[in-house]
Each structure stands twice: as structure tokens, then as C-alpha cells.
Amino acid sequence: LQPEHVLALESKNGQIGPSFLDALDRVNEIKTNCKHLLEKYQRVGLEIVERLAKRQESAYRKLFHWVQGQIPVVAARSDATTIDPTFKRALNLLKQRPAYFSHCFEMIGDSRRVMLIKAFIAALCRGGPNGTPRPIEIHAGDPLRYVSDMLAWVHQALAMEREFLLSLSSPRIVSLREIKAKKAAEALGGDEKKGGGADGDDGVGSEAQVITAISKVFQGVARPLTVRIEQSLVFQPSPTLTYHLKSVIEFYWRTFRPLVEPKGVFCMALKALVDKAQETFNKLVDAQIKQLSENRVPYTPDLSPPPAIETLLDQTRTLIKVHADCLVAESEKDEAFVPVLDKLVKAILDATASVKGLGESNGAVYSLNTACALDGCLKSPEGGVVQVKARVSAVVKQLIKQLITLQAQAFLNKAGIGEVTKALNGKDVSTAPALEESKLRAALSAFYGYLVGVNTLLTPEMDRLSDPWVRVTVRDGVGVFVKESYGRLHAHVLNPKSGYSPGASSMLKHSPKQIETLLDI
Image 1 (cartoon, rainbow, N blue to C red):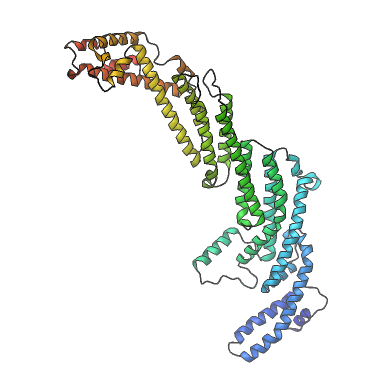
Image 2 (image 1 turned 60 degrees about the vertical axis):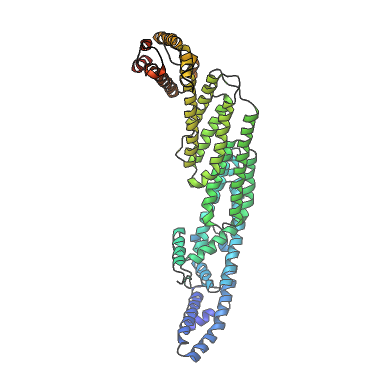
């Protein structure tokens, strides 16, 4: 050691400066060199180590007490760039004594926690300097903005706090990507050295310490934040707003989770808020479903979805939009949302299917109008919503098929060959009274006469189908059904095994192709 080093280490004024830190660095360097000296000259090396040990411990103890005294001043600063470089260097030198360093870092965290609570309350009640930005509490009447503003403030504070603490514990700011890459490399090379140098310049140890410190700092914010968000959830009975709040809270929770301890008070408080928001949303939707099943919704004169169903359709449309806009990974957000959406969709379809007082055709039109409106709401590229939409589309196809059958049978009955086609599809064709030659000739004559004056294939209630595409599909389906039924009847008459007289074919005035032209299909 040089004389100036000894003078700096033995100074009694209690002040720490660059000269003291240089002297302590020199002591650490000499001690490191002595480890190599011990390999050849053990006696000389041990003597030097013994002389340095007391001086080194005394210096670290002095450094520890000085850092403790500086912590209140340093912790009160809002910008890491204004911190005295001497303090940063002193704190990093304490890493050679982990107990001293951990104690000092905990003291910094405790001081920052108190400061953060005061800053959060000030942001809520007073706002920024000169009223800009405005107090967050002003927007308490708008729950979505209120919760979003609070979490955005916490997000900004957390980023600043992380930068502040990392600047103290590490010579450089280490990104999360670098930390993950370092940990992955260590996991692959199990025997590689994981520790950093004297200054902790690897950043991994510093990152772990900063995560622990940030978790403690934000413990104080957890309680006031939780109380205010819970109030927004309790006093807002709208499922749409509740799900929107849940999406915002979940996004910030997943954003904060890599930056704090996952099992810490702050992170667990946010997770509990996500669960509570989801639970509230589920209860509100279940209450709507129960009300819909217990109170029968009256049908409308035009067979369109009634106001109660329209309200649920608008809600479903909004929920899907919020779901699509949520920045959480698709698989994670689908897990909780899709089962609720599935229940809501099923309840809407069941409500229209169980309506009484409508005929079979009108009931099918009513159900089909609602199913088509619901299918139009489920427009989203999200995988879970696509699956629900596929099930609703299958219901629409089934209802269209049912309506085609009903309309075609009604047309055949009016045309006079309804009983004939039913008998032709039965088991005992040869003994069916409707297929007797005389009755069949009369039925076909009536059928041809009806075709000449018919204007439409559909009954008047089909005008109540709200979707023009569905109306055209049903009309074309009825035409195909009638053509195929006449085709089977035409083939039956011409079949010698049917047992008709040689001149029976004269009752057939038109071929199936001509019927297709007459039906305009």
C-alpha cells in the first residue's frame, strides 16, 4: 500500500471519497495477488494476508456505515442520473460483503416504498405539478379510464424504479433479454462459472436482487390499488365493462410478472384482482342466462330477435371486440372467455327455440333469424371464437334444412301430390292407396295445373326471414326438393315393376328437366 492509501483508510473524519475507494480497491487487489503467492511462498503470503485482513474488515465496516448514512438522501431522489457516483461505487464494493450489501439494499427498498406510497396517493388526489397531469381520482366515475390510469401510473413507476435500482446495483442496465439468455446459457453448461466479478458486472445477480427489491417497494402500493379496483368491480354491474376491466388488469399483471417476484405481495394482489374480475363477469353472465331462461321472451310480429335478445347480441358483439383487442396471448385469454361465450350463445339459441304460440314454420323462421343475427356477431379471427361460430353456423344450416323440408312439403300439399310423395317414400309402395293409378292420374293433373298459376315456391311467412341470402337459399332448396320428389315419382310411373297399365305413362306431361325449368331453379 502507498502512504496515501494508508492515510485514506485510517482517516477518522468518517467521510468516504474516491481516495478511500481507490485504497480499498488496492487492498482487494493485493489480497487477490496473495492467493497466487500462497501457491509458492506460503509463509510470506500468510503474513501479508493477516496484516491486510484487519485493515480490510475495518475499511468495509467504515464503508458500510457511511453507505447507511447516505441511503435516506439517495432514496429520496427520483432520477438515478443525479446520484453521486461515489455512492454507486461504494455500494458495488460492498458486494464483497454480501451481508452488508443485502442490508443496505433492503434499506433502500424500504425508503423507496414509503416514497412510492406518497407519490401514488399524490397522483390519485393532487395530480402532477401545477395540476398536470390531473388527479386520477377525477375519473373515478369512469371505471375503465380510472383503472387504466392507475395501472399505467404503476407501470411507469415500476419501469423507473427498476432503472433506479439497477443503476445502483450494477454498473450498467441489464435488459431482460440479456438476463434470460444468460440463464439459458448457464442451464445448458451446468459446470460453467455462474458468479460475476467483484463488481457484479454479469448483471444476473443484480437482476435477482432488483426483482426482490422492487417487489418489496411495490408492496405498499398493492393495498390502495386493490381497494380502488375492487370498488370499480363491485359497483359496475355491466358484464361488458367488467370483462373490459378484467382484460386491462390481466394485461398489466402479465406485463409486471417478469419484473417482480411472481409469489410476492404485489404480483399476487394483481392476480387476485384478475380472478375477482373473472368471477364477477361469470356471475353477471350467469344471472343474465338465468333471467332469460326463467322469463320467456315474447316473440315480435316480424319474427326478428326481440329487444331482450338484441341487447344480448350487442353485448356479445362488444365482448368479442374487447376480447380481440386484448393484448394477452390468444390461448391464455381464450381459456376463461370461450366457456362463458359458449354458455351465452347456447342460452340465446334456447330462448328462441322454446317459444310457444308459433306454428312450425314460423317457429323455424324465428329461430333462424336469431341464429343468423348471432352468427353475424361472432366475427373474430380468435381461435376460440371461431370454434363457437362454427357451432352456431351448424345450427343455422340445420334450421335452413328444416325450413326447406317444411316449405317443400307445404308446396307439394298445395300442388296436390303431397300424399303421393309421402307414400312413395314409405315402405309399402305397392299397396299405398295414394299410388293407385286413378288417384295418381288425378294428383298429377292437379299438380300440372297448380304449376301453371304458381308465383312463388314459399309461403308468406318466409318474407319474414331477415337475411336475404337465407331467403334465396330456402327458395332454391325448396325447388330442388320438389324437383327431386317429382323425379322419383316420374321414375316410379315408368318402372314396369310398379304394375301400372301400358298407357299409364300418358299421365306424365312433363319430364323432370321441364319441371326444373318451370320452377326456375
